[in-house]
Image (cartoon, rainbow, N blue to C red; front, side, top):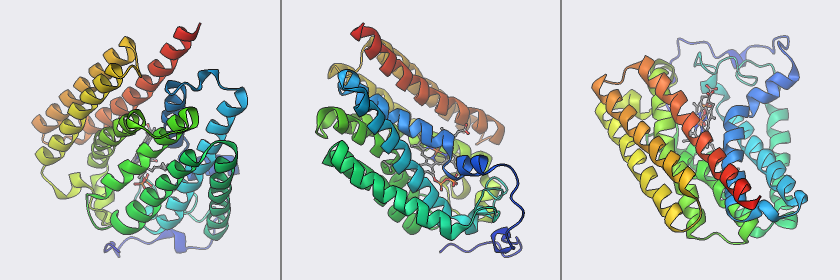
Length: 309
Ligand code: HEM
Ligand SMILES: CC(C)=CCC/C(C)=C/CC/C(C)=C/COP(=O)(O)OP(=O)(O)O
């Protein structure tokens, strides 16, 4: 495991403090609700694009509920495994496990049971490929990213990105019964968006990651190297939305917005390079990159809804 800064007291070793804030707020923090919601949106968008609109309401609910359950469970397991380094970073030190407000053993048991139940229920009520997508999410986020790579190499985000692309595979499979080239394109859209997402953020929190000895690229490399990775991801995003449009998966509105978003992320990568990785600029770019992915999915779903009217 990566060397940690001994000067910082790991608060999670302290006796459990009185629970501050409500249990609901702690659970929302434990499952990283905003991140999990965008991940579920990516899954649901793939479901709708795959033809799920006309499926019975119970199918929509199964995709959404099992998406939230499985992604929340995996996120909570990640938080259990990272509670030591989370306690060292100001950004994460107030999290329920890092601060000792929630019992880590109980969280591990509940989230493991929730994940297992999601896997079984998905294979019964949706299909095997949806379950395979959930399994990919677990293997790449927990085993490859969190346990094997995050504390050792900047390449960890490659594994995390595959995990982030897994919900799209599941959503498409839930509608079509298969994982085909269009499912892979939708999954790849998330994968190539991740560098902008995490490297802009990691630039702003560089000191945190340095304290916890987590080698995110902005901590260990020249800003131009980071900018190149983000820029290449933006370029490939552009190719992917054109590919989805040529395959008839998305229409002209998501295509136009997707190209605009890819261009904007590329321009932000160039500005990041020009400002030598300015932290304040990177934080704004992080917020824009999140907005772009969410708006793109909303345009994809809304366009399908409008075409069905
Ligand atoms: C290697 C993959 C990823 C890494 C390392 C990563 C890391 C992070 C980090 C460190 C935060 C800040 C959390 C906090 O401070 O509490 C965050 C927030 C977030 N992530 Fe990710 N993430 C990854 C993949 C994804 C994916 C695939 C999605 C969605 C498709 C996503 C959506 C979000 C959202 C919506 C937020 C909240 C942003 C906000 O607070 O404004 N992330 N992520
Ligand atoms: C279908 C399914 C189960 C998919 C799994 C989707 C999923 C949870 C992807 C995780 C993405 C990721 C690596 C987040 C960063 O964690 P971090 O530990 O770097 O973030 P932190 O520093 O904020 O804790």
